[in-house]
Image (cartoon, rainbow, N blue to C red; front, side, top):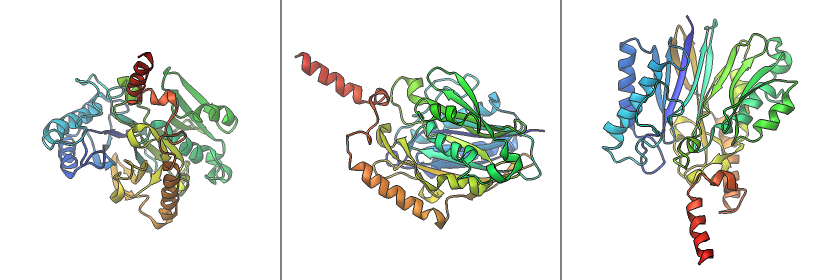
Length: 364
C-alpha cells in the first residue's frame, strides 16, 4: 500500500499581529486530527506553526488530492477560525480561507498544499520545510541546490543512483502551464525560468533513474486568487532523503546561505530567508525577517515518527547571524528598491490605492 504525506497550511488567525499562532489554535487542530486518527481517516499527524501559519502534517493511505483529506483540513481551518480565532479576536482570523464553501480540494481556495505519495523503502526519512513571510518561488533556489548543484550535493557526483540527475516540474503560476526539465543537460533552460520566482515555481522533483518522486512544494499565490494582497503565500515543501535521494545533510546544506526572497513586511519587501528552530518560529522585526523551519520524520508503515527540529543546531548560528546582517543592510534602503518589490509585484499590494490618490492630485 502506498503512503501519502500531506502538509496543508493556512493563516487563520495570529497573536499580537502577524507574530505567531497561539496554543489554543494548535490544541483545537490537534483535537480534530486526533479524532481523524480514531476514525481511521488518517494514520498519524503533527500540528505546528511557522510564524503565523497553522501547519497540518498528516500521513494516510488516501493518495494525493484526496477529497477526504483536503476536506478534513478545510474543516479544521474553518472550525479553528470560528471557534477559536474569532472568539479570541486574533489578527487576520480566517485570512487564508478565500472561499466560503469546500469544493473537493483546497487548492485554489487559499491554503497551501504539498503532498507526496510513495511506496515505502526499507527506511524512509523525509524533511518538511515551512516558511513564513515569503512566496512559493522562494523554494526555487533551494531545490536547485539540493537536486542539481554538485557543490551542494556530493551524491550527484559520487552516488550512481543520483548521478543520472533529476526531473524538475515547473509551474507558470500566471498561465498555468507546466514545464519539465532534465538535469544536468537542461540546467540552463531550467535556470532561465526559475530565476524569476515570482512567476515560475518548482512544483515537483523526480529522480530520472526511475521517475520516483523526490520532492513536492506548494504553489499557491494568494494574490492571484484574490486579485489583491491578502497576506503572503508562506509556502511548504516535502523532500525525501537518503538511499537514492540526497542525504539529509545535503538537503540542509542548501539552507546555509540565507538567500534573498520576496515577502517580509506587508508582502512588499525583499529579505533574507532565515532558518530557525521551532522555538523561534515567530516573526518580530519588520514582521520578519522571512524564516523557515524544518522538521525531520521517519515514515514507517504509514505513520510519521518524530519529528526532529532540523535547524535547532549551533551549526546554523552563523547563518542566522549573516541573515541578521543582511536584514540590517537591506532595511537601510527603506522604501527604495531593491528592498521594496518591483512595480509588477506591488500591483497586488495596497500601493495602487496611494497611486490613485496621486493620480487625482495631478488631475486637479
